[in-house]
Image (cartoon, rainbow, N blue to C red; front, side, top):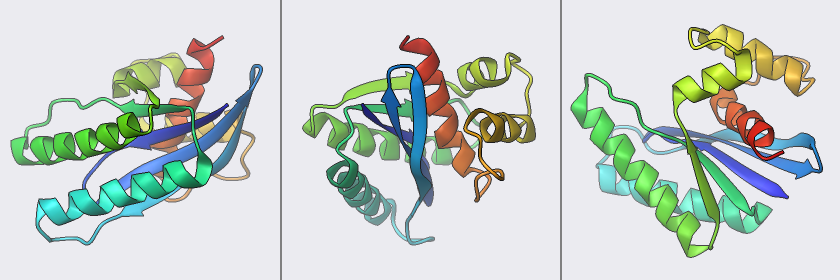
Length: 156
């Protein structure tokens, strides 16, 4: 089973592609979907939509795991990221993909067994779990990879 993991934002959206066979999960690919900075949000959303469509067509996932939004003090950022999430969810629904959502706190708890884990602890945990030589670069790419581990734990 191929799984697409997404940590949505507007200028950079992180993704990971994993394959689960029985109880073993293998990381296939990960990276960033970048949009043009400092342009209208509608142009960014169109780029995200096209990039997600291309990932789906390239890897043919069966499930998509996407990080839920959490409240921030910057309401404009929160609204823009919310739009990006729904563009991603809409494209996934068009392809009849099952969508799972997790909060950042759920991710921390499942990966490190602590609600208080910092980003470096999470990145090191992913490095160990997936037997990677180094922390995924850019560092925020680990955000999408974390979701693959959570799904693997919850789907046994």
